[in-house]
Image (tube, rainbow, N blue to C red; front, side, top):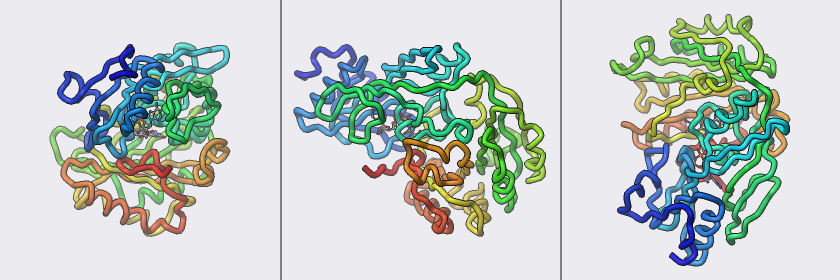
Length: 393
Ligand SMILES: Cc1cc2nc3c(=O)[nH]c(=O)nc-3n(C[C@H](O)[C@H](O)[C@H](O)COP(=O)(O)OP(=O)(O)OC[C@H]3O[C@@H](n4cnc5c(N)ncnc54)[C@H](O)[C@@H]3O)c2cc1C
């Protein structure tokens, strides 16, 4: 390997110890199968890898956590950024420089030491760069807006192998090596989750409750089909559970009463949380899983389509699936660097099917059936949650 002979990182080929670990990520339904993996230690390694691929006409992909894998490489060169995780906080400027392989957990860990917080999402394991490239729908998105709007200087390597500094996220295949982001002053979040048993009207009820919320509150609702399996938590086992999530910058205990009327309450944990524990609000999975997902940005949320969702996706449906709705609006509507649809949408509706029985074709058919009734309100796909589908370029 000529151009990568001076790498600080590692080069792995099929059969090498560590090759399988490095090519795999959070998405367990598929994985890259490259001819070589460059485990980059620094931007110079990324540059050497890009030049190497270009000189030989190799397909190129970049992966950090693998949460957002679309089409896997078959041959070619994979750059793994997982060793590039340094986060440097400038507390006075309220900014952080984040290396390309860092996750939101890494940034939260560094920022909270200074009473600051990033605009992270529901899961600490998600990679910062992939999330930012999708706009970034954060835990407190209605209060602080899209994470992508906090991006300052971006360091990267263009497809021709040139090291560049940009003042925006790239859309041309440039590999990001580090990104500077703004942080907010925040030490605690008021929130958590409240779960009720699903009823046909639960989504209507949550939609009506969330419609008039102040910007200080971000909320979502997930309908989760729990198998009748002793490994499941006792209150949820075999049930269809509506998990309502709340994250706010003020105490909103006085607003949540109507949620307890939506159905039999199965669980409630609401109150002040340190920012470092705010990732517990959504109960996201932490171990790799095989999944397919799709998501739509909707102007409004009502109609027969909403009431059909529990029947289509519950524990006894042919393709049990998790459906989440997130309330948008608020500061999201003032987004600066995102597509117009992101600003105009009132809701994000998404479906995730765990492929531990249903195959991907069945999952895709269900997602189409689920989204079809919302066509008149549909502002387009939210690509960041369209797992296994290729984003348009
Ligand atoms: C459990 C879970 C929870 C999630 N929660 C949220 C949420 O709350 N809000 C939200 O907005 N999104 C959320 N997402 C979606 C997530 O933001 C996207 O899947 C994102 O693409 C993941 O980025 P990654 O780096 O972790 O994944 P990867 O699969 O490693 O990367 C995804 C893609 O990003 C691009 N990319 C990664 N690194 C670079 C780089 N250095 N340079 C150029 N391109 C790069 C590549 O195209 C890559 O294929 C969630 C996803 C999951 C699975």
